[in-house]
Amino acid sequence: MKLTWKIPQNYITVFKTMYKLISPENNWEYWRKLLKESSDTAHIPYIGLILSDLTFIKDGGGDTLEVPATFGIHYGWVKNRSLTNLLCSILFLQEKHLEKEIIPDLEYQNYIAKLFALDEPEFFKKSKSLEPSR
Image (cartoon, rainbow, N blue to C red):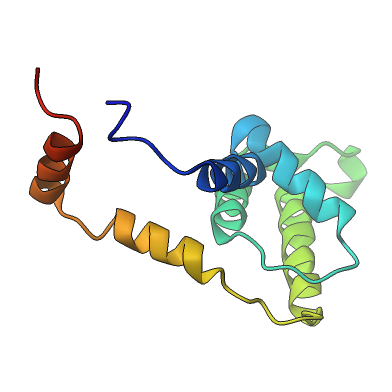
């Protein structure tokens, strides 16, 4: 299906760049690295990553903190600290203001819109027209 999946080179470059940016490999390592490096600038956080972090904090280990018996048991210490760090980072992002307006790439948006505008029978018909059976 080489003809069916023939995509212009400029879109392939954009897709590869976006894939590297939003790749979930190694717990979103590249995305998290970019967030740390750009901590002084405003950006739009990825809600999926925030929600997965919240789920991990809720379901992950760390229910108690081992301390001397005189202090008692501190339930949820690690979870509360992790939750606080995450919420503080969200508050920090909300306080930042974007320095310039986000301008959408209309050419790219139109390409994506056309790509997903077809339903399955239309996709099949288009595929058959681009690459007929032998």
